[in-house]
Length: 354
Image (tube, rainbow, N blue to C red; front, side, top):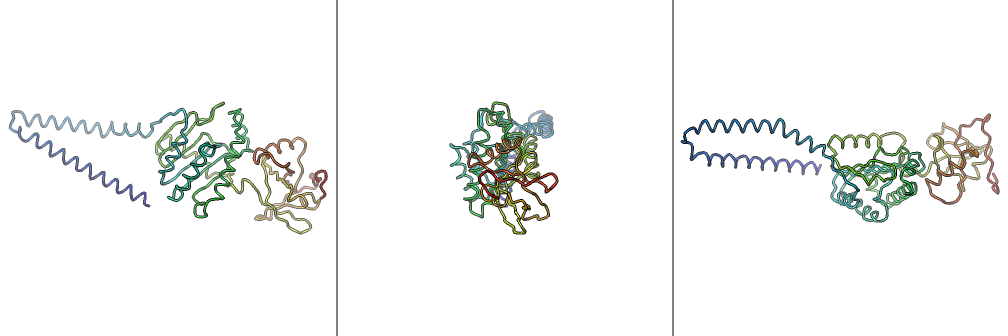
């Protein structure tokens, strides 16, 4: 509301200024023409001059001004490289919204992370809203982008971006968290997307080149800007996105002999199926022959935990490492519909007892 008030006051001041300039020009014209009003042919010359000026004015208003506005609205400034310092500088003066859609962003990397996070805190104090959408590092789109920009380690860069955002959000005061939203998408962006208020820049993804190397700056309210903004809005409000908490863990209830045990387990998705790491917290119950699994908020859907086949074990483990990084070896089991005719209970790893 405060911003609208400032815009309204600004428009009124401009209207007064234009009116004053118009009145001044009329007074100046009268002062110049009045002394020569008795000159021969003055009336004819005056009518010719006024008519010619009216025609010029009509052409300017009906043809030239719309053309100039259209060209200005759709002006594109091409840059060879995105200036992260300039983006942070724009955020320092932002008063409405910041949107970002990338596989990963250099704003969360070494030379810029500290200043970026400090600037975000200041912007949140002013009421600026942030929406950041990054790609799931275990998704096929992330793997494809990693192939495109090799030898750049895109998977690690994406994972580290998400980890840093998770730490940043955890440190935010509760009053600021609704204004700083982060979503993780299994579908990668069509182009790099940075928006700060009415400024927008996007980059085209190319093989062997990161998107920051070729940027186009456009107006948010221009045709190109509106197309890019519409793509962002559609994906942001689409299905399949997760917040940071849901990206890292899924909550499951494992019931053995009518005794329920709830766990928050790390997981990955492979071919549309969820694989959870039961090591070490859920091991005692995950391999029990009579276990059943439900979601705490939806007790009507039941699963059993099934071990990976040799054909999928390496692939699922690689996806897990891409999402969480190298560490203690996971024990990954698939959430499967309980069908005794097709599914046999999982066998515990060597050295572990059910």
